Image (tube, rainbow, N blue to C red):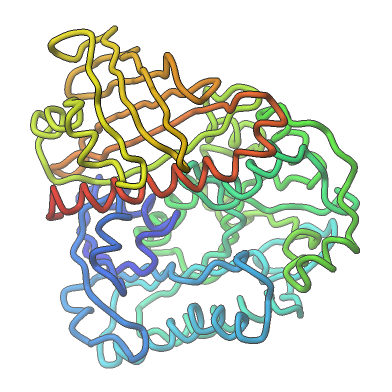
Length: 453
């Protein structure tokens, strides 16, 4: 199957792309910036450029069997001003209509469009299935417009997937809320009884694949875990993971004053149930929130934070392993603002137990760092741990997994700041910003060094 994918560099898009290519499907990704996309994609694909100011060229549908439309600006970035609302509509419904116009005269087998559980509006404790009526607030109208635009696409069948909040190690909801808990403590929002409909990213990708491959899959599906969670239960589960302080509840009035209409996302309640998926025999790998969140942050201890990144590289394992395990190459893939230099290492060749010394400068402060190779599995993975440096704990796992003729590079960094709660409150925001910049630089450098895919 040849699949045209929008939103391929997003959380769900990357997970879906990996699933598709692992099963032998071919993927064409629509993107505004090929160079940026290469650095953010975790699977091999063909890139097609679309600036989104005009309809895409009809040629993008050549030889395409299926379309998965996942593009859309984040609804949680900033207050919902009128201009921001227009941007949200344009990135969803207007994009779907533009795709439909470009595909006029063709007819693909299936068009799968993302939507959101916000389709139902704020419904308290009511159990919401695909048969439930839509809501009337901005987010509900946005989802409704999105789905109506999807229905106009020329396809033999159309599936509309109403996603809950996505849990993923690479970003999204948990990446936003975890630092807040670590810095300020765990606090339920409002009364705490409002329901969150959520889905683990692996189950989200599997649900899209189900809709693409199953001939009977058409119409609306709630893509949410079978067990929606209240805000109070969610806060307790995440507090158990991060070990944050329990703080008084955040008043609804304060949240509305701070975030405006965007506060509806935090205080609204959708108790969504995946009635159709369950009735059709779909199996959820992560049905329960606490276990799903723990799977995202597997191995993390109290007071610690995790950063996780993936990138697909089109080279054989021996070539990649030789590059990544040379300490001298660290200087090539480290951004200049760190002034990073290797001082020396304890053994001629890197192996388990080798210590490596570096010096760098961060925010003007000189730092000496020593790491030790804690695990060493040639061509597969290695782990370095800080022995001496600025962190209370730093552990970086570099893993390389086969995927579609290349390697999926997975980086997992677990760290803790010194001085406990005070250190997290003062420094976590700076550290996360710096680590994100480091990984963004590494990804672009890898793409330049290992082009293709």
